[in-house]
Structures are given as C-alpha cells and as structure tokens.
Length: 245
Image (cartoon, rainbow, N blue to C red; front, side, top):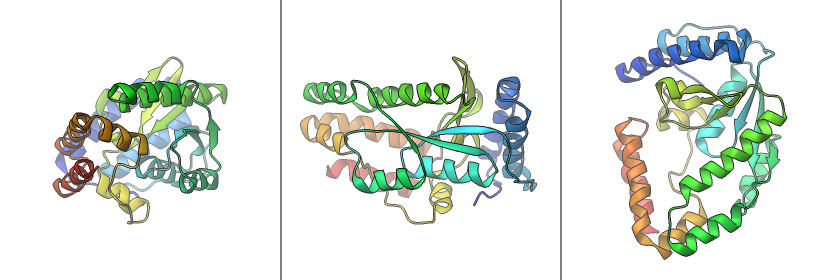
C-alpha cells in the first residue's frame, strides 16, 4: 500500500500540500482534516496512524483507471467512507463497467456528452479538455446532491494550493498529487500489473482523423515526465502508443 518517500522533490511538495490542507480545514471538518494530515505525515516521516473507520465521507471521481483506482484503495485503507462516482460514457467497455459495478459506484449521466464530443471529432479538434470538464461537472453535481464535502480525483499534477481547494461549496482533492505519488507507485498500489496506453477509443478516432492532435497527448506526457509523475521509460512507452494509433 502507501509507503513513505525520501525523494526531495516529493517531500517539498508534500510540505507545501500541508499548507493547502490548512486552508480547507474548516470546510472539510476535523475528522477529514486529521486523517488527511496523517496521510501526508506518513509519506513524509513514516509515522503510522490509526486507520479505524471515520465519519468523514469522500466521493471519488472514479473512471476505473489506475489513478482513480489507487485513490479509491488508499482512501478506504485510511478509513474514509468512500463513495465512487462514475460518469457513464458511450466509449466504456463492458470490462470497465464490470469494475465500476464491483466497486458499487454511483453512475451519473453526462448531458450532451456524445453530441459535443462527436462534433469536436468531426472538426478534428482536441477532445480531452472538453471531455474532462463535462465529466467533472456531472460528478461534482452528484457529489453535491449526495451531501459530500470532499470530491477526490486521480490528478497527479496539481500540487501545492491546487492539490486541495474549495470550489462552489465542494472541496476538490487531487489525491495522487496531494500525496506526491508517481505512476510507478500507483501501479504498485493497484497490484503491480497495468498496461501503459491511452485507452479511449474516441481519442484513437480523433488521432486517425486529425493526426496533428497527437502532439497534445505527447505534450501531456512530457508535462507529467517533467513533474516526475512518469519515469522516462514510461514516457517513451506512452509516446510510442500515441504514435502507433
């Protein structure tokens, strides 16, 4: 499961993330605040903590990918009451849906999703940013309906003050970034077996229609590599996957 880190860059980020946590202390309540602080101190100092169930409820934007799966596992391991929330998308395969159901995720519709993304593909325009914003709007709306204070995501890059922050009455917790986790650590947490690839068939379709959009995926990979979320070897593997589509 989660392990302490001696990496100086990660340790710097973790200390900065503690400052961000202080800013939302009142919004999330003492139970959630204390347990999240203990998770960061465990990463920094190896200081073990009591992982009995808390009354702190956290919704997780759950795609069934590696980052959101690790987020789900760590939060449950730490004693949080976790509610996975999954946006039901047309490109989801049966294997993904089975995993979502096995975690008892709440499925939510994304109004106008297919029409919007199809229109972008027809134009040869990038889709990932719009897809992400539409999905998160739907998931955030459901989290508010459920009365949950915290929504955790699988974002690995949003360190510091954007690792945990308030947004319209909801606290967004970019959990792997908050704990300064990299992709290698995430893969170990979920069981050590994971195929590094871009798994979205709509993205593959866009690449075939507009090959120039591959550069945006490669830029994202390079950004994650510079942030040390990906190792150079992982980055090469992912870039080869993009170029092969």
